[in-house]
Image (cartoon, rainbow, N blue to C red):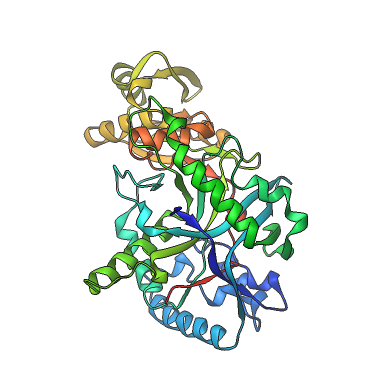
Length: 413
């Protein structure tokens, strides 16, 4: 059986899709005004803002009350037939981004028995970055009694030949269009088409063949090949997995192979989509002896013909060449060195997205900045397969307003 499958997808029957769809709950966590505007915009209308808990509320006094209200609202929406069920279906999605490019995806469900977020996992679906297990229990409190799920998870495939998602896009004119509207708060445009019947079966066949041959992509690379990687929403998927494992532990000997909690709804995207951009996240270390740190890096983690990484100390700059034998990625070598160095020496690390901001911060006294190169798309899967997991803050997939909006759902009870 494939690890990614068609699902019985809940699709909203509402007057305003713009009011229905809201951005992933883990965005704008330091901007309560954003969420206030969302609530005001959707006031009086069916909306996913009433079905999700913004992460800014996790751990606050609002969490318990809002969680109970969310579960009650989910039940109310089901009772009032807000949703219709698209049986055994996928949804092909085209999302227009801020720069005008169009990112393509496919909504379906993943088999949680094929996913493992632990370090050293050899499962078909793996996390790209370390999962902070302490972040899972608060999210389980939200999901545990919820009758439905709404995904903001973006899962990735390493499909150079574009055999999985793109053939569906080529036939979209023949498919039923489900929606086409402007997302609130600057999220730009999104459109979706229903994929059922022969088209869904054709996708399943292509994925089966792709999965059977995926190991050929990584011949000669240490580690066990994988089929999919989690791009965004890893802690949400880890929460779904944890709730499913909890259910199994509470029901020993019960066959849960067809239970809806075994699966989680996600959007699958291809890292080789032209609109899919991986932006580097740079490192600045403050309150340190920058010269001593640079000397230690050169002594312990550099090699000829290594990864070229530019450093900045005040008005000075130069290049170090990080040893490729230590990791598949430049950030892997650098982060490994910094983690060890800062355990024994003073200094505080911060993660910076913008090149100019990194250079400016390195101007501070007792500071050094490292401008990391953008990760090649093909390095993502190779890095996870070979190194087990990527260092934290390895890359960013687009800007905040380009994250997934809640739209489709699925029953999990």
